[in-house]
Amino acid sequence: MADELQMPFASRRTVSRPLVQTPRVRLNLERVQPFLYLLPALVLVFIWVYRPLIEIVGLSFNQWNLLPTSPKTPVGWANYQLVLGLPEIHRALLNTLVYTLGLLPFSIVIPIVIAIFTYGIRGRASTLYRAIIFTPVIIAPVVVTVLWRWILHPYSGVVNKGLQNLFGLAPINFMGDPLLMIPTITFITGWGLVGFCTLIFASSLTNINRDYLEAAAIDGANYWQIIRRVMLPLLSPSILFVTLLTVLFSSQWTFVHINILSLSSFRATTSNIYTVLYDYGFRSFNIGISSASAVLMFIGFGAIAIIFLWLQNRFSFYDS
Image 1 (cartoon, rainbow, N blue to C red):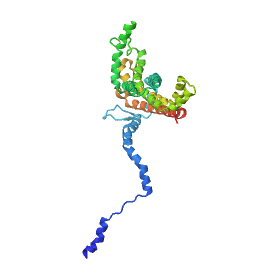
Image 2: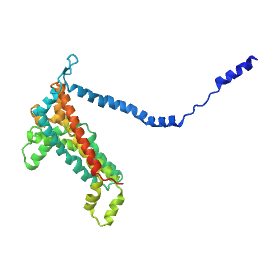
Image 3: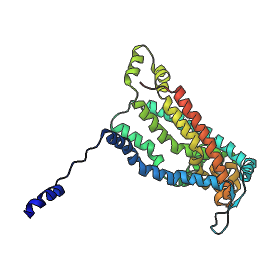
Image 4: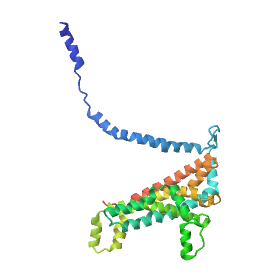
């Protein structure tokens, strides 16, 4: 009798009803699931990118020397007024423009020429040439700078020795002449940039439908007309993208070479925006002016990026 009374309760404990998800719950899970995969990356981006940016904006309104024992003194907009009146900033802006214009042939013209004239290479030869041309990119910038300083040495460098033996020229001080330092730094930076940009244009060329090229050839277009009327228009998205990278990162790419090659007496001659930020932040320990300069640079480059994105959407041609 007792067993009969306990049976219903035992059956209730052992029997479980399956959970049934309603269509609304399933739909909500499908919407949330992609964001859960992105959540770790978004958290890291916020910690390492946007959190420092917010702190820099706060530091730009204070006077501080980076010492933990030193208090932060609020100064309002005084740092921004000082930055806009600094002669070093004006010189750095002009040098940044010179570096950017000087790097455009190395990031646009030369890579496009190499990518087009090596377009027909296939198989192992293509892999070999791409590995050779990409090698400067994987070398550390400090190592590249030291190698070029040895190559361009005024007395024992390979370049000056060759010029002296072949043409009898006097030694050229590439790293000590104020007129030659900016072109020298631009050339060293561009040398390491050619391979990266060439691979971008080469990959864009491989994505072009060959039917367009064959149709143009059947219609009577010669080789140069195919390049000008077919290849270059279809490369316009990549051209604008690489141009945007050059404008935004020219100061960052040249910073290492300026910091190593430039003597203290020629620092102002070769400086750009990044060197000014570095000097005020970690040499003069005036973190307020450095942060204000960084905020202004962020706003300026952000506006340039928006303009380039509009140009890319307006003037780009796509193979579709």
